Structures are given as structure tokens and as C-alpha cells.
Image (cartoon, rainbow, N blue to C red; front, side):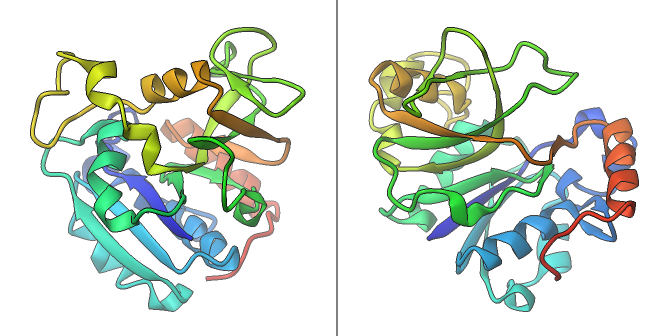
Length: 240
């Protein structure tokens, strides 16, 4: 299985830390956030990783190289000076990801989730990892029912962890879904992933997993500092 790491964000909420370093390359526990993902992806049997970049893009190949140190092949996809959002970024990377289902993960999270637990062949267009709602996002995103299907409406709600397995078929109807929305007519187009997921949920095409382990959305300097303290207390992870 191939994997995509979202690493093109501007990191505006992490200023001034991201003035000179892109957020996925900020260190926690003695290594860049993105390096934790690379180690876990390799441990799960992923052999090729696509990393989309924008802000301070040259720093990624300089820091990570070709992926050989993890036993991976890394391919970089530069989105230009303006990031394409999650949906546009995934759409732009599809030629590198191929026709088989692929894993995608946000470059600015930290988790002990085992990527090997994800289905290699999801029954629908997407399979998402959900977590308990963190303090900064108490209302959550989606609902996971007892059968493992994910819904946009209902209760109780969980938070999307920024981890999932996707099929390219998720994008089959994206022009109709976004229409004339700002960015959708650009070349390449810019759009968010969430509207595509909600549309697929209405068709019963999204399943999910509830991860009850450790997960952090490293969205602010304060959360990065807290993660650093937690890792100093002894989090386990694959070595890299």
C-alpha cells in the first residue's frame, strides 16, 4: 500500500515556530513529527510515501531524503505557493498514488495508532479513524454507528483523526459537489476533503474505526509543548 502525508499547510497557528520550519518538521520527542509517521508507516508495510508540500517545501527533501533510512521510497509533490487544501491536495497526488486504495495521514498529528490495523480494501470509498473529542474540538465531526458506518449527522460525535484509507472513486463526482465554489475552478483545483466525505457518507460509502489510544492534533505551540512533555515521559514508537 502507498501512503500520502499532508504536509503543505502554512502552519499559521504555529507562528512564530513555523516562520522558518514547516509544521510537520517541528520536533517532538527528538524527531520531526513527520518522521514518527514514516517510521510507523514502514512498520505497517507501506513501501512508498507521497508527501505534498508548499510552505518551505525544499526543507522536506533536505530533512527526509529519499526515505531509504526508513526502508521507504518518498516522492514529493509540490503544490505551489498556495496549498490546495486536503481535497485538492489528495486529488493532485492521485497520479502518484495509483489505482489501489491508499493510506493518508495529516503531517501535523502525533498518534500511537497502528497503521497496520487499517483495512487494505475498504468496503466503500473511505475508511476513517476517529478519536474522542479533544478539549479544543468538543463538538466532534462525525458519528460512528455500531455497524462501523460513519455518518455526518447524529450523536454521539467523534473527531476525525486525520488518518484514513481512500479509493480514488471518492473523487468521481467532485466537480458537481463543489460547482463554482472558490478555488474549485483553479488549475490545479483547491477544495477541502470533508464535503467529499459527507457526500460519500450519504451514499453509505464510509466506514470507520474508533481509536482509543494516544492522539494529538499539534495545532498550536502549546499543544506541541504538551506533546513534548508527554513523550519525555516515555511514549513507545518505532525507532528511526
